[in-house]
Image (cartoon, rainbow, N blue to C red; front, side, top):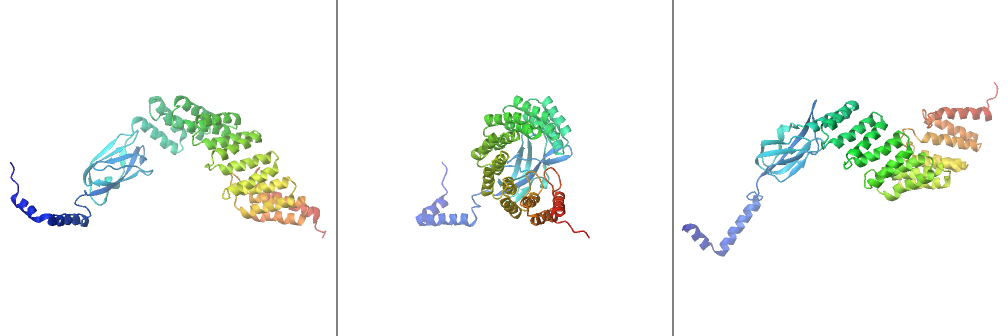
Length: 425
């Protein structure tokens, strides 16, 4: 039998309850004053950079998983390859880097000094080596980023041929289609997107491929009917796709392109009704107003342009909408109201441009102020309005490329020759 420590037992017996309480309080105070250092292990942090190996050196790699022995924390690399992990127990540790498609890397004997941020490799990047299929994909991707689309296309096709079961196969197929878009071979792009849907129906790119089939038909090939069919397929097969609102707008655009303004209005309205969060709402409202104007419902068109300005006062479409309010009044032969609305557009949206263009709206508005004055036979006011075009908007053009300033000068010359001829010398 082990004997008790007689001296220790004697002291404890003679301390009594009060003494034990005092001893307990002293221990607690010691812990508090030392910031719990007596109980908590000392820790440090670790940061570093992860790159992938490339033909010309290396480049940052995103979303690599970083773990360190001695810590339950993990991190993923940012876009620039940087990572940071804190609360790592001090001492020698092992760092592990995992990224799908790359060889898992372990760095041993990384010493974590407490209370500081430690650097891996003294700040130099950790380099990951790609597996064979990943290496091919990376080579193609680097070429694609460098706009060498033909070379990228060749490498991605090689990946599909050599590694048909690779997890990167659908990625390669998707970007093969995009190479053809970049090379402006839109018919071939459609075929390659269709190949993705046939070969990889469960791919994360499936809805993207379906959308761009419609997009190529609508925007690049000028084929609205096939585009409508492709867009409807996306809404049916992928109702929760990120492209759903773009697709709904595209259906409206296709009906508009075929002069079917009634169906265009219906489809544009669905963007507003079904996707109230969409950034495309101002464009949908603008397109509805344009459809009513093209269908010669000018009063309704004016109301719809005004709704756009009311609901989306910061939209880039407000300037063109205000112009068309003036233009609708001009078409209704209400010239004084048209002049006021054109002037409002110039005053409120002086720097507004036409959708998808860099041309200013204001020069056209200023020209039509002059033209309205001509219809009212207010020749002097017309001269002033046309001169403002020449003074303020040199180089401006109509949508057909003709010069607004040159045409304004023609009107000035005609008015002067007709109504204010110079007397013979």
